[in-house]
Length: 369
Image (cartoon, rainbow, N blue to C red):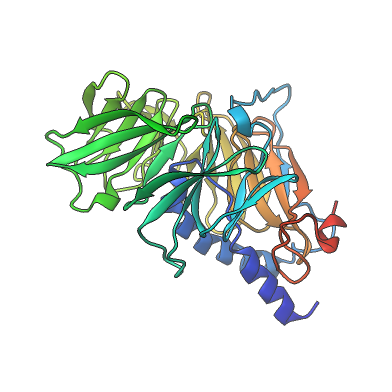
């Protein structure tokens, strides 16, 4: 393989997106893209991209541990990724959409693709919402949004967002299965909303939609309409709430969202993401390819290393990464968050020359089992 071909393959591979936690994925995608490119250069320089090396390797496994997959509804057992306008759920289910995908969210009814027709490298409004079912069927939801921040959960058939309304916003919750709004709650108070609607961050967690404002935020019970002030969330940084926990990137801690109590101090790190159920925290090193996964309740951790690629979570709460193990064979590595042990499977949508192969495995990737 020539140096030019290797460079082209890595550039094409950088477009593969592995979803993080559903809400956090949207704002973190650009930051992870930059880190991924730096990581690929470092890995090549270190000589780790050689034939036979697994894309993700586990260290210091914990004995006698048992990972119990979270409820992921229709997406159980899938490893969703997106590439341009292609959404891939597993080896047998994929779909091509009408527009490039900006973010991929998990719901119990299926994957939710947020798309934009403005494929300029930066994207922009309007945004559209499409459901991709577990068998690869595509169902446009007829939702057009002017802001990018939406949220969903793997164990619920709902998607939530906020729309400007008077001096505040209106939280909207839609049932994906029926494609009807099931809740609308007006939100305003002493914490003012950001001046631009696209900066209104929301995070769906059970029956609560958390809304970040300036200086604090709100907890919205979308079923009863009750709104409570929550000082632990703010609009000055990305927000994700899962299992009643929130990551505070400024203090490098995980907190109980209602009380503000520190549940886990994970030390200084450039980034961190909770699993969709809030049980685990994935923390990358500083451009060295090292990954740690914490059990948030106990504080114990296992160490993973990735040689290349995007990282995130499966709908069931397993860490997984897009990796390049040989320089032109691309794989998805899926790990056990308790033991750190990882398995890999070929990624069937990049071929020998970095082109999409939506019909199945390419010869070069199929040989990399």
